[in-house]
Length: 324
Image (cartoon, rainbow, N blue to C red; front, side, top):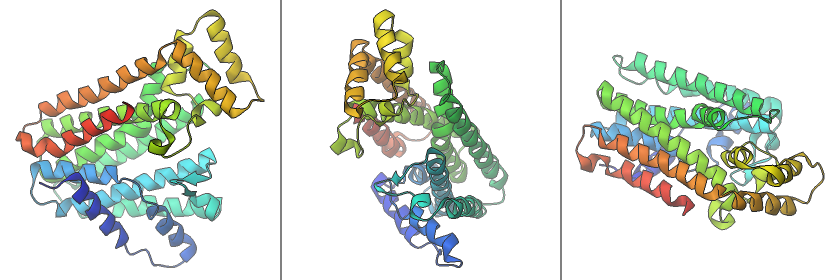
């Protein structure tokens, strides 16, 4: 069995060996730049981990895992354009470093490239692999649109928000595990169990990001704290607070959201004090734990030896402690 760390090394090595020194450089240069920005490579590693649960031979899953990582970075590139974000992983975003037109075209090229890496799958599983990937890609677009719709709405519910992040974030993690299981030769039941495991991991992981933006340590979290509060971003914490707040507390919170002129630090402190009053920290932690515990329960049902689940179980438990 491969460890999570060893699979990260394999993925990074393979990405470094990609043949992207092509012309025109204005098209492929931004692709090289986007893929060289680093990251934990969680999605391709999850694909390889799932494959390894059912097969000793992970070589057949390496190119599909690269396709998934290229696709993931394509979505980040386009997200950054839509969000007008200037930094990604402490580096200028592609559209900031180059320009928006170049970024759009390079992103399109990455999407097309991603598909080519799946065609190395064996013919008997290729239709199911492509069906899964296509469905996931479309769901992510749906999630992104819901996210944009929420920007102009003041009545977003918890259920709507959770559905949005399921589409935008968690289905890709679920599909990483599902694709790995398919390539590894798993049966339909185990394949579905891994997909559902991944979706729960993804939901918990996104709620962690919401939580850490408010309560995280900047040295550990890796980015400034309170950005979601400053931008009035609809997160689980804000929606839950609006749901629970009453009277003066509700009026104070909504006034802070409507206020155009403010000192960011003061707004962060004021909104966080409302969260503390409403025990939003505990509510969020409970929801995060629920998703990760659901993932662990699903893992128990997968019909492979326990030692073959170890690396994925370690990852789930490691992610769970990020907020404690």
